[in-house]
Every structure is written in C-alpha cells, then in structure tokens.
Length: 112
Image (tube, rainbow, N blue to C red; front, side):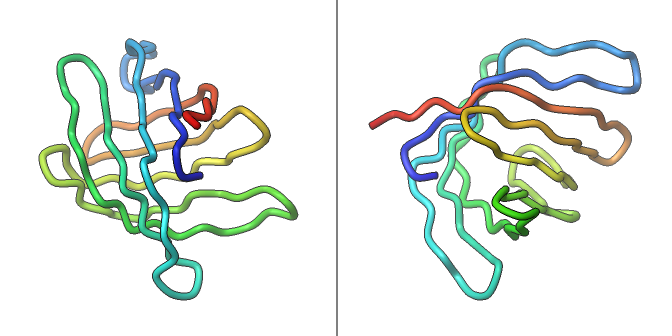
C-alpha cells in the first residue's frame, strides 16, 4: 500500500449527494503490532490537503484486506468510523461521522 493514491468519491446518505473528487495519498505504511498498521497519508478534497498518521486495523476477508477504523479522531477533520475493502485496483466501503455518513468508492493508483 505504500506509494498509492485512492482516488474517488464519497456519497452522503443524509442528502443522497455524491461529493467531488477525494484523494487519499498513502505515502508509507508500517506495521505497529498485531492487526494495527500506521498509514502515513495525506487526505485531499476541495481546498484541503491534510497530512495525517492514521493507525488502522486491517482485517482479512479471505485474500481481501479491509481497513477498519472505529471512532478514530483525525486532527482537523473529526471522528470517524469506516470499513473499506481493497481489491485489485479498486476500493469501496462505508463511513460515518458525528452526524452524517455514507459510502466511498474509487480506484487505487500506484505512484511508483
């Protein structure tokens, strides 16, 4: 996962809208312990470009990794819960924040 970008969109269930393009730039990934990994990422959407270290749990559904975060506070953005499945060159999942949530989906693009 190091050196990839997740480029896609998120849909908000509250008003059934699909937002503009979002990018999650995964610069580096390192294992912490057990199922927990540290993603050094940049979250880019609209005029935002926020670098953040994200400790995430990776669970496996057969050969498919699922990013699992529960009530993770992301500085400058809020607290979120998400389940994101990664397979071949695509990702899809669900997310929720304090008073909203929805789905996210897109493609995985290798940078190197």
